[in-house]
Image (cartoon, rainbow over all chains, first blue to last red; front, side, top):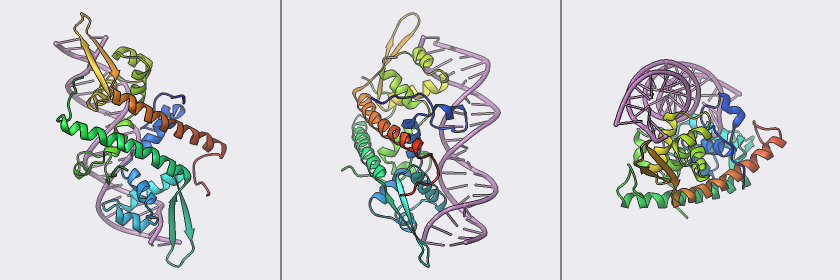
Length: 129
Length: 129
DNA sequence: CAGAATCCAATTTGATACTG
DNA sequence: CAGTATCAAATTGGATTCTG
């Protein structure tokens, strides 16, 4: 069993920096808007900036660029530059990225099955035991 | 394979509400600060408000109360009220909560192993392929 | 094409004080 | 004990504009 440290997700600049838990860092990273969408989009073979932007209809350049940079920095995707005349860049998942993708698929089915349950029993507020 | 919808994590109030992906919702929920800490803390048997607050040294009442409410709302923990003279409330993981805890453990070891790798190869910036 | 820079609005966190 | 209420401070997301 992996040791699970305490604290930290948001508010990176504070004293929590010293006490970062890899799990929380990962969750915080992947919970950013569009993050999983970009990851899955690349996994499905959309490997260029403009293609991804089209696939994820409402994403802005700013955010897409940021997410790609973060995913690359975390070693989840890799980037290939081609010195073509209209500059070309291609993204693809690394092994790590694929591994994470599989883990997220599990989380996704967990989350989805729960949602179905929720719908049947009404929804929000408090659930009796 | 579970269908993975597009978009949404943060900024709940906007048009993304219509298009929520259970995975993103879950990630967004669990990435909130102290959320996993509270979950794991309860899993380890700390089942009272004051005990959890002591365990997680720097958490505020406000945040702890909020996290407990969210976890309960999501069906991950359950709450027992006892009508004792000093009011007593006990929390425990539901089956769902334990299932999620197991999934998070996997994510945790994924995240941790990566971090070790990162440390050896220096760290941040760009990783060559 | 593939981004980088800037500015502002919406969220979230945290500290403090208060209550059944 | 187990929270709730309020308010100030820090992040993040998104739109717009610009560039090699």
